[in-house]
Length: 196
Image 1 (cartoon, rainbow, N blue to C red):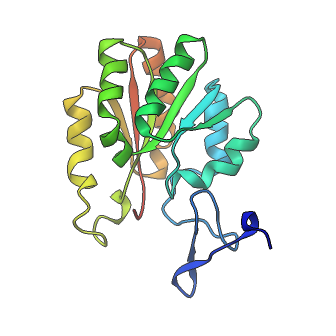
Image 2: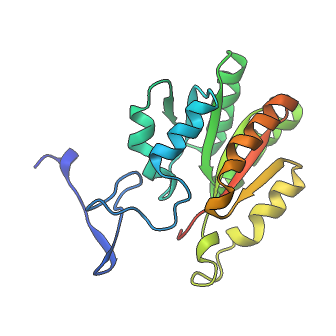
């Protein structure tokens, strides 16, 4: 077996396998707290006419990797740092593309200056789908400071934000993207995730 085919299996319990690497499912099992399947997110993104997905996948977002890589009409761009994601999306937007940034809230914290500059100084209508780490596991994972800081940071930066915390709110992603593009303002869809 070559190094490229090495598979590592981790388990929380006998019947609960978890992905060993972002974007990979072991034994066909998907991490339990995912708001969208890969196929659903591709349908949303292509329905919105998006051209590029600029991202750093986490355990939840990474489940979409294969679907996004194989989707017709979408180009997946994985950057090294979250600040690069906003700069890359801004450049794509200025070049006539329709990008979306997909990162976790911890990356939102890291990328604050780049996002502030692009959204407030340059006033570019970039849009981000931000995974809200541990939100769906708040009672079983007490002490995750992402739960304390994510929403206040978005409020302080005055971003037009919607919160998708249950499957019946999944429609908000497309609706909010369209509304922000119509107003030509930056926007954020904050999506609840499970374990860190």
